[in-house]
Image (cartoon, rainbow, N blue to C red; front, side, top):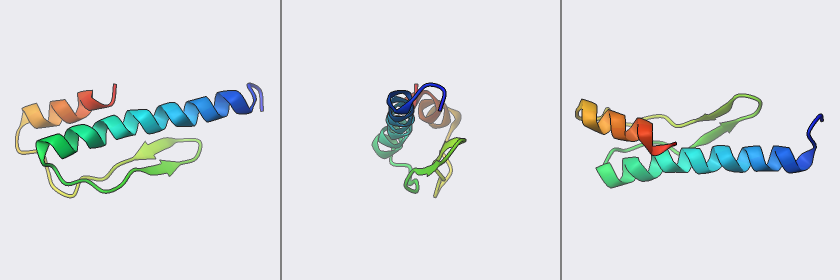
Length: 66
């Protein structure tokens, strides 16, 4: 209510882009993940269906968002 609808839409869009970065990296690395779930006033969540095979894959997933 303070910043208006333009800010709200831009913020949700930015969260979407961030989470899609994680999904894109997971797809390229062959790691199965669930769809992104948007949680109002909190952010988003993506659940892993399988664990990364090593620390490098886990780091790539983490860096995929930013």
